[in-house]
Length: 273
Image (cartoon, rainbow, N blue to C red; front, side):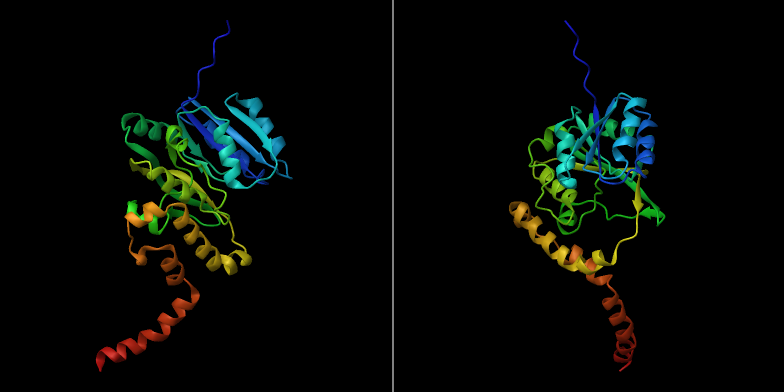
């Protein structure tokens, strides 16, 4: 009787849609990991570039890398498909244009193995590409994550907990499907842990003018959809509106900054009088 292959401890899910030029950097960072018990599942989400060819070459280099091609269905669908095809105890989503430090798997697996109550593990992160420097995220708290997402998408979580949720929800049509999943996981109970080391690298690419124009409407939709998806969690954990994504959006807008410049001398005059 043929022995069943040992399952992987970690499943790295890499959705890819027309990002063939960045994919090798991402996959090379995975192959450099100091922790070896993983599988990497690439989901080619209907790409029209060289994604299929590039990914196929890597499956020949290392049997832990597997490629599946599907019709384009969006990021949430691609991630869910990859997870359903995986067998790891822990899941790490990784976008095809990002990369990870060689110690990320080793450090995160240790935390999850030693702390059954911890559901999500992430780390500090740096930008690269069009922007450099550390990505400074607000420290996690339940109150804060209800107001604004403070955990990036490439964070570890337990497959057993994911299976109790709806997964990445396709009704988050303007993104933030990772934020929605964090709330779904936290609804199951448990805690979050941040490794105090830079182990994740987020590629910053130029945003289009269309994205900027639509951002306000997208934020409004996103906020409403998050509430509808997690009514009980929001109703039981009221958050400070000044922490919200809406407040930060308007506080950093050009209009707000111009208003601050105009009002500054008037405030000074008022304080004198």
